[in-house]
Amino acid sequence: HINQLACAMLVAVQVPACVARPCPGAGGASPAPREPYRPKARAAVVGLAAAASSLRRPKRCARRVLQPFAIEPINPFMSEMQANVKFLTGEGLGLLDAESAGKELSACLETSGMDPSEENRQKWREFCYGFENLKEYCSAVLMEEEALKFTTDDGRSLPQVLLDGGVMSAMRVDQGFVPLNSFGEKGTEGMVMLEERCQDFYESGVRLAKWRTQVECNLEMPTDVSVWENTDCLARAARICQANGLAFIAEIQTSQNTGSHSIERTAYVCEKFYSHAIRCLNEYDVNLEAVAFSINTCAAGPEAVVPLSDQVATYTVRTLQRT
Image (cartoon, rainbow, N blue to C red; front, side, top):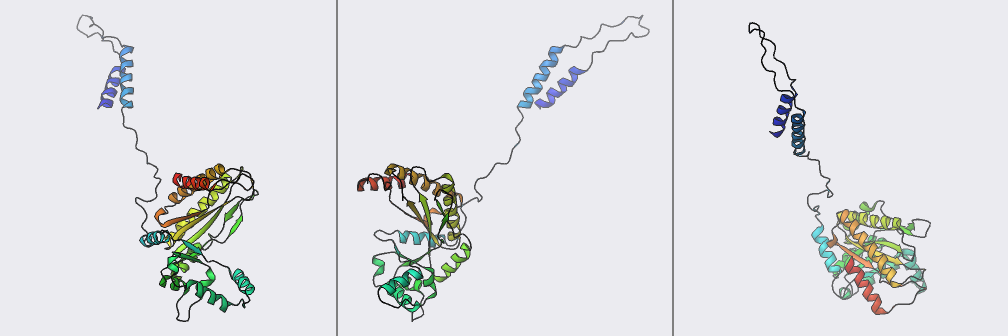
């Protein structure tokens, strides 16, 4: 209504002033002329129209939605994965790393005077995984991929042997480290065919997936590119594993081969890396209740003064609390 009123007033004012013509038969007498045009009135009307335009409601623009979903994505395996992580992190228990490649296990058997054959490797695994009361010492066992193709004499798979003993089976899903740049930093490979491998692991009875990440720590490293690349790859792997029913174990290895940096430097680097890893996991809609972290303690460089054990514990706990 304000805009219509202002426009009507503006049109009325802009009509040119007209002079009355002499009326025939009136003795040539002409009426008094109209009041001349006043610029001040036009300026007032223009100001009123501008004020009315400023009162207009701005156009509604589409908001940028950061979340791709209205709620948390529904995962049919979520309750199972959360229960598995809770069981894994039980008090006094943990993950038993029994992963040994075929060549490494064969070398150990050969050193002990045994024939490094596939049959003997099978017997060794059956002995380890079928150990009585194993559940009192660990909640899960990290296996190698070769162990999935073996079965016992009664037809059970090795993950089933562990499950019958009250222990879960875990599998390392990464495929090692590769050079990331010319500074000596490394990235993790294993994204190729990861979804297919996770599906096969779940069908075989595996319920935990482990992914390794290595961080170089000294006075100059890690670089920003290394942090971004490793955390992004870690989050993408976690999303794929959880989508296929495998709870995720993120192992972050802090490599300190050289340098005279202090424990404060290590704590600072770990805090920044862990925080960025959590951020990437959230961005990829990874459920943190189905994720477990395996980290190193904060320590000084090999050329620095060795910190006290209390300092190591204090800085490690503080780093976790801040992330």
